Length: 482
Image (tube, rainbow, N blue to C red; front, side):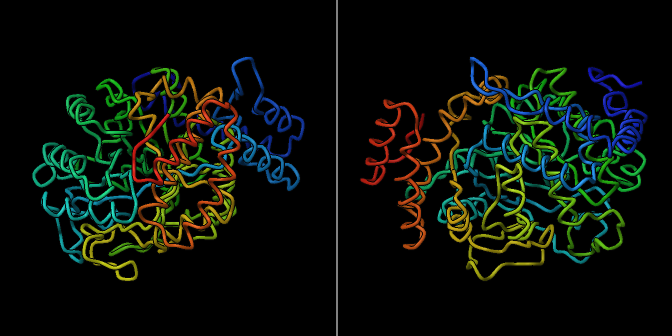
C-alpha cells in the first residue's frame, strides 16, 4: 500500500501507485483544462515573505510529462524557466568529480566498475595521490568536489573515505582551497553517515539507478547493492545520521523514463513528508558508453527533447531543489537544459581514478573512465561559455559554511530569499576565479559581467559591502561571503 511516510521502500516507492499515476497521466495527456490547472497551481506567487511555489505531486507532474500538445509543452517550458529564474536566477554552481577508487564488489551490469570486468586496471589513490589530484583541481579553479568510489569494504572502507576527506580539506595550495566536499558513495549505515557528517561533508549523493524494483534486482545481480530496500532507504539513514543535505538521482536509460520520473518525485515527497526537507539536489544522468558497457544493449534510451522535458517537469514539480547535469551531456544539450532548470554543472571533469594530476587539458586517461565524457572542454572554456550566454558561474560554498543547510536552507530557498546571499556570493567567488585562474579573454568577459551584475544587488548596504569585498579580492584578499 502506498504510504509517503512509511520507512519501507516498497511503501513510499509503491509500484501500484506509480502504475496508476502513469495510467492517469496517459488518460489526461490531452486534457487541456486539467493541464492548465496544474500549471496554474505551480506558478510562482508573491507573498509577504517573498516568492513561493507549491510544487506538484508525482501524479500531477506525470500529466505534464505525458502531455504532447505542442502549445501546452511551450507553456511547460516557459513555466520551468520562470521558476528557475525565481529561485536560482542566472547563477550556475560549478563543481568537479574526484574518483578515489574503482575497486568494487558489485556486479551492476551497466557500470564498468563491476567486479567481473577484466578490461580495466583497478586503482585506488594513496593520500599523496589524493593530494596531487586536489592540487590539480585547485589549479583549475575548483572549490567544490564530489568524491566518487566503488563499493568495496576491503579496499574502500569508510575509514579510507574519511581519510581522503580530511586530506582534501587540509590542502591549501597558492590561493586554492576545496571548501565543500560532496560524497557519492554506496549506501551505508547510520553510524557511517554520522562519521561523514562529523568529517564535514556537504551533500550526500546516491543515485537510485532505477526505482523499478524488478529491473533493479536484474541490473544488480550480486553484491551489496542487490538489496533494493537497503539502497532505497539510504537517505532516511543518512538524515538519521545527521546529514542535512541529500541528493537524489536516477540513471535514465535503464528503465522506462516515465516510471523513473514518478519514482524520483515520490522519493522527494517522502523525504519532505518524513524529514521536513526534500532533496537538496536531483541529478539526471543518462546511460553512456564505457569500458565493457554498450548502452545500445539497453532499449530505454531517451532523446534530447525528452530529456529536456524531464528537466523542465522536475523543475516545476520540485522548485526548490538544485539540479545537476554532468559532462556526460554534450555542450548543446547542457545549454538547452540549463535554462529549463539545471543549477549545477561540472566543468573540466575527468571520470578516471587519478585523471587530473600530470595530464594536460588536451590529454586525459581513458583506461579507468567510468563513462565517456561528452563535454571535454576545460573549466575556463566552460566558465566563459556560461558568461557568454548570460549566466553567472558560481564557486560559492557559503551556505554550507554558514550553516544554511537542511531545513534552514530550504526555509530561505522556498521563498526565494536565498538569492539575497547567493547573488553577491556568486560574484565574489567568480572574481576570485578571474583573479587566480582565468585566461585573459575570460577575465575580460567576467569583469564586465561583474560590473553589470553588482548593480542588481537590491539592498544598497549589501551592494556597498560587496563592492568593497570585490575591491579587496582584486588586491589579493580571499574568501569573503554573505
